[in-house]
Image: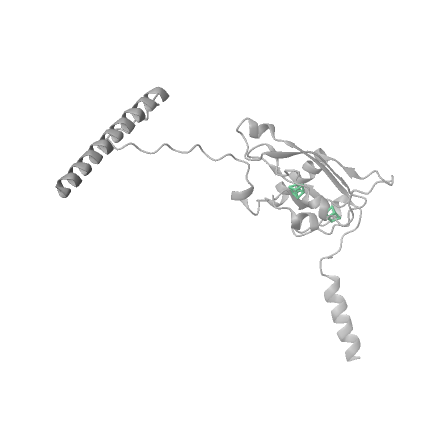
Length: 221
Ligand code: SF4
Ligand code: SF4
């Protein structure tokens, strides 16, 4: 009897508790995923410069165990205009999400804060190869993830694309003498000066030799 009452007590207590599970796929009954949830990989967007963080370095592609990624790099036009620190930028990027195993290796090996495991997970398709996400799609997933998690790069100093401010010119001290101006001397003038110096050296040597011979003669007499 005591055991029965104890069991009944637990049943009544549990019956009043809010459910911790959600009815799937009812959209209004779903639970929010946690920030640490690892969905499909997505590319991050550098909003300060207006371009992806990805430089197309291919490190993630070489390390992906299922070889489901491909990319193409290009020279960054914004760098040429002085608007970005990134010399290279991604031109094309594709992940075959049907082959991705959500291992997160691509995120671990990326040195540019350019890829994250987003919260996207309901992306099934009926076609065998219909789940290829291209660059715009991956960036859209990334922007959504960045907004949802207030994402910040792990290495902002290293990976920000914002160009450094121009270097300030050194302050001039009014008491300092004016800097010496270097003037290019014509080659002929240098040669003339060298010839004069050679002549003078020869004269000095001749005078020295004459003086030596005179003193020798004096010594013999
Ligand atoms: S996501 Fe990172 S590792 Fe992959 S190509 Fe872009 S910069 Fe390189
Ligand atoms: S999560 Fe793993 S399998 Fe998926 S793209 Fe990244 S490295 Fe490849």
